[in-house]
Length: 112
Length: 115
Image 1 (cartoon, one colour):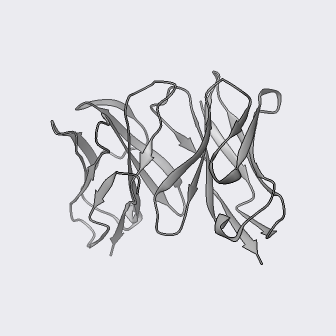
Image 2: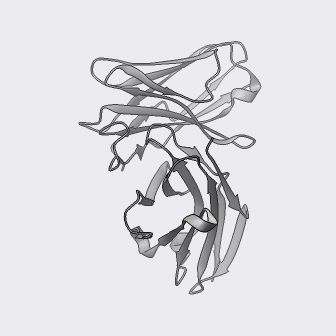
């Protein structure tokens, strides 16, 4: 069975500070892992994905995530937060690209 | 703009009624996925169609059904609506199914309010 746990439903950082959004997964087989971002009144947009190639994945808007099998984690980071990063972020896992299982989401607030 | 079009954007209906949500995938995409996003359940996968055939099923209620037509657009039918069905329903599309390089693109969703 697959599941995703996102620690922290709300994260607040100052502009220019490090962003760290946590995601842990469970999967019985090597998973595909994703981070999506949702802006208010918008659909989800893919930030990045891990598909068993490099464990450090770079995505759009300066985000990156590292797959750590030993920790079953796929945390999302960005060195310097921008006001435009304020949104809700979803981590997702898939074993076969047919079904995606999403975490409960983390709302990122960026303070000026 | 993801290229996935969902209509209507908003829908308000009464309990017990039936509604149909429509999704047009990106040009060239053969797979369509439906998701329900609600406050208490989060984002849940409902069902996937690939080239007109059902491919995967998630937490979809028996009162809900979907289909994908020959022109690849898809409809999600929700019947005997209950207050708890109020949610944002997303459609996503991708080129293939089960391929490691498949990326799903999401529409902006249909917000359903059951009163």
